[in-house]
Amino acid sequence: MRRPNENVSRRRFLRTAAIGGTAAFGSIGTARTEGIRRTAIPTGASVGVQKVAGEPLTQPVGFETADGVGYRYIVDQIGRVHVLGGNGIADEPFLDVRDRLKMRTDFMDERGLLGLALHPDFRTNRRFYVRYSAPPGKSTPRNFDHTAVLSEFRASDDLLSADSGSERRILAVPEPQANHNAGDIAFGPDGYLYVPLGDGGGASDTGRGHVSDWYSRNRGGNGQDVTRNLLGSILRLDVDDREGNKSYAVPDDNPLVGGEGSDELWAWGLCNPWRLSFSGGELFVADVGQRRFEEVNLVEAGDNYGWNVREGRHCFNAGSPQHPRKNCPSSATAKPPYDGQQFTDPIIEYPHKKGGQAVGLAVIGGNVYDGTALQNRAGDYIFGDWSRSFRSPRGRLFYANRPNVSDEQWSMREFRVSGGKNGELGHYVLAFGRGTAGELYVLTSETNSVAGNGAVYKLVPPGDGDTV
Image (cartoon, rainbow, N blue to C red; front, side):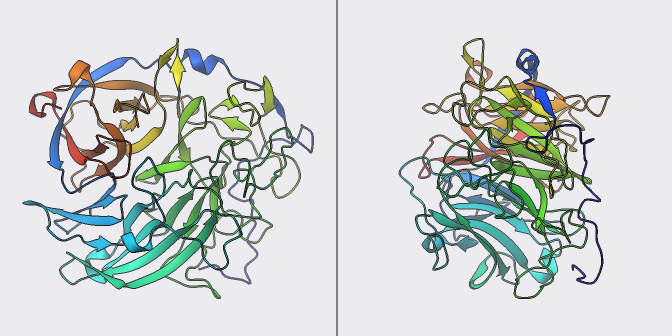
């Protein structure tokens, strides 16, 4: 819990740059075009996929397990959480919040039931947390689209069902537009809950509900703002305590505690941080881009990842995203509360197109592999892309190797899916999950609408996979 009388420096965890640029823009750098040449994605190892769950899933977006609990919990965007046991998916859903959602099911919608995190002591205290899109409330600004809700529920003694009446709202954030909602949540090894929020939606971090930031060359800027709302950021909350009239407490060592910025913030400068995962003490966040680049970030306290000044490592032009600026700042303004903070580069980046060919549209964050089934993949970050195409299911599976030098980008390759036509998965990739033994699962759908045909596949050696 935050201690009000303790004088905590809000900048002690921030990486700051030497203040040599203008107060308005920070230091000016040259647009990085060399990254395009380095992001060809060669084909690498083969992998098999083994189906472990199908009906009644539509758009599965979350997969959670807990030590000492033999069940797996699958989040379906349509508003249900299902229990997967040894005999398949249970007949009755674990949780059903469809009546609390604002969303559409007849087309591609980024709203819905978006995330689940089991409390570290779930087996004994039965507490779990979900993120979902609710209708606007009485305090929601006029013309805003919905409310991003973080709530706590309690499970039954046998952990096979949830008490729908046990809901305790932890946080409700007004969302101006329907997209860029992020939605994943996860407990860190420190016991705190990490909650990503997108930039508020629409496009380019501009328009209704997007505040102006310090960078006047681009309109909007929720990603860079740290004082007026929580959007475009990663929050870090203590859900085991309460502070004042809040349903949570703020950890003492959050980087902006005691200063001008919002105490809840852990990191910022993000567009749509759709999925995240921990490996040891490292936090991996995949941030879906706007027009040209996708990125994965290794997130640390107080870091600024550049949106909407940059998309990936490249200058961004909010007025014309397909025509990036030649120059843009490499750090934030020298004015407080930014103090000339240097932008942090992603560890992985790839373009939407290369040489006229589609590469991907939306990065889907995964996990560092620590299982045993996939040879030579230990320590690799396994992730994917939603699809090469909006209209057809052409999701991709990737893996990336950690470099020898910490400030270099990770080297990525594409898995060839054995049993897949032309080595492709043939599904939209929605999310990844990790089992208690370290093996990984990919969550998919055959359609791009919420009322789709969903499935969960386990990643297995090539000879053990199904035909897909």
